[in-house]
Length: 174
Image (cartoon, rainbow, N blue to C red; front, side):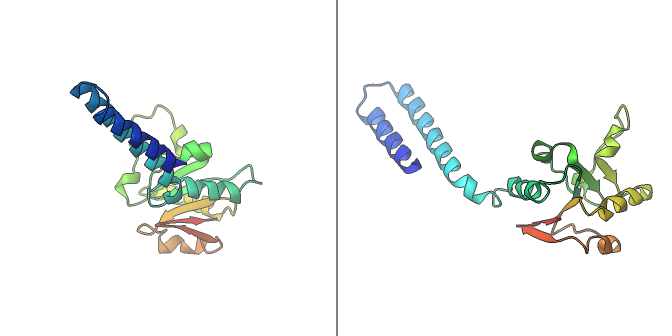
């Protein structure tokens, strides 16, 4: 279907540039619009098959929803990374755990109340380790890690009971 659309657009813009009696500025506008349409068609044709290459998290979140479709209460722990798009797919189930990666840090100085503590754990503060361990002990919870930032060896014994599904650089422990 996309190939047919590309051919129709190409024929139209060939006619537009060489057969129509339009000014140069109008032809340039038509050419740029056509190029944009072609790029959009190509993107929407190839993007769904290459979600992991494009760093999309949709496959991971779809997998998580499928694994926990029967459960109402579970949390998704994102270890040492921030995934802002996660809330679009999974709602308020996301808990970001920051340890050593500066990208996962969150500036909480200007928070008006402590509601942010439900969705963010900073492991630089040793008082937060029990909360993180309690989340890891719950078998209903899911953990998302990246190859470069695995869970520390000191807490590795808590993740042994989880199965692991790989999505490129990412691991989903469920």
